[in-house]
Length: 321
Image (cartoon, rainbow, N blue to C red):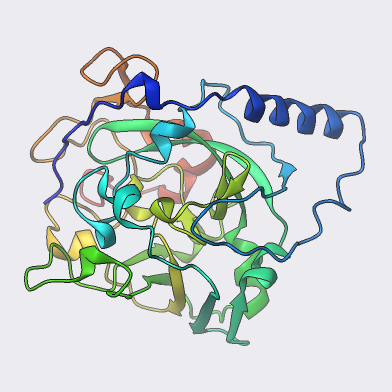
């Protein structure tokens, strides 16, 4: 089971953010002044290797105006059980993972099933969006993602009218993912997740291919992961290889393992506690310590209620948690 085990990151390991912040300002100024961004943003062919590399993107409209989580924290304090159950395991144990070549198969209730490689995914239009990220373990971050709307990918395969859900599946590659090896496994593989089709098509839902101006590091879900900012972080399935549109609600890993603790919807809700801890407050990682100094109230739908609350009109979110 997931437990909140904060691990302090020494300040000496933080990397300066000045260069990255300057880049964001230049992008915003360029957009405001009508600077042409299309040429340098034309989907380049990237290696997507173990070491992140620069990834250009148009400036997006989404930014909560909050201090970014230091990149060193966001890339070293992670849940990615395919590499281990400790927060530092994904960074320490993902060096052998090779996210190339890569493709995502999209099938099921669609008119045009297809397989998309990384170049095809980037061609869907990358933009930078800064989102709050709230873990079910009551900690949070603010991360500048680079990605494309999931709806743009779904449009390519033409969902059938009978499709109601999207099922996601991550890769199984035990030779490169040490958390998938051994007789006793913390989870069943592959890791699977799901969204209702209207959630998947919502403008806030993106497929991320980068963060902090670079391609995704292995420990953050290289080369492509799901980001749904109004839901708890475990919904953000990483290293996706397959999406299947279906009429029935798909299985999701944590909901299947402990349905009384991890709901299928997993909307951030301060009024619905986890059976083992309160969700009324959260601890913002980075900037001043881990044990209460960055504590703040949890926002319903992680602060995105104006955009997404209507998706759940008439639903009891204490039951459909």
